[in-house]
Amino acid sequence: DAKTTQPTSMDCAEGRAANLPCNHSTISGNEYVYWYRQIHSQGPQYIIHGLKNNETNEMASLIITEDRKSSTLILPHATLRDTAVYYCIVASGYALNFGKGTSLLVTP
Amino acid sequence: EAQVTQNPRYLITVTGKKLTVTCSQNMNHEYMSWYRQDPGLGLRQIYYSMNVEVTDKGDVPEGYKVSRKEKRNFPLILESPSPNQTSLYFCASSYRRSPLHFGNGTRLTVT
Image (cartoon, rainbow over all chains, first blue to last red):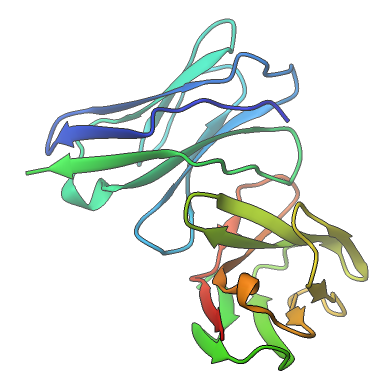
């Protein structure tokens, strides 16, 4: 599976949009981009995934560049409860390599 | 409610004393997996199972065993725990290639 590169940490003011970038320049054609988050030491929580089109659900939006080499997870109105580690994962099968993720801190 | 249930949530044991961490899911998922999480190392896959009686090693299988005799259960067995297996453990399941559902974790300390 392709590797991903994410910033180690980011800050965001409450109520503002949080834009979390992810580079996956070696992604192959059948690999999806998944985003999960982990709040404190709870089990990781699925957020969203996509192949090549942009996706939106009740939690977030996923923007994938046309060449699929990078993507951005957007939390449109971040709240304090969105403080978590966010993992960007590229995979074609069941096994997901979680890496170290981005630690997002939402501040009042 | 759809869920993955792990037990126990916390466990303190001594070196060499066999233990089992249970994992059960009520979603009829065919795929189940165990991960461990350590500071600075992220989540690493220990074992996974594609279906009943089908299991395979992940990235860090040494010192662990699993079994999949029923679709809903996927216990993690430590035959002779050692201090380097002190970690936070997560069980997960999914259907086909749908997103993984995770349990709430088991924090294991081996002294």
